[in-house]
Amino acid sequence: MTCVQYFNEDYSGGEIEFPQFDIRYKPAAGELLKFYSEYAHAVRQVVSGIRYCMVSFICSAAMFRLAR
Image 1 (tube, rainbow, N blue to C red):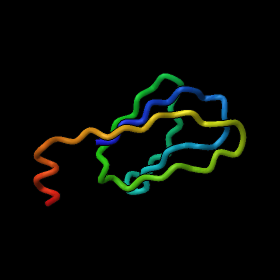
Image 2: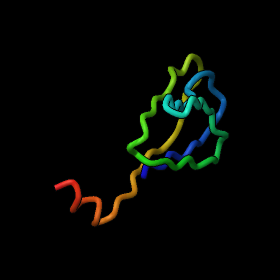
Image 3: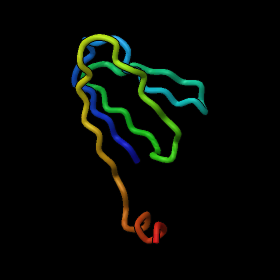
């Protein structure tokens, strides 16, 4: 699981995209976006301003056993 916490929204561009679902989204400041890490995703180029966010990953012991 991927978690992205967004801290600001005073920038242009920088939307997150999920091509397989035909989704392009620009979260608001304070929003936490969670999605399965396996989903193909990309972030559009920021064209003005600075995009501040924090990315973290949630995994379980079972996920590590499967990866071996």
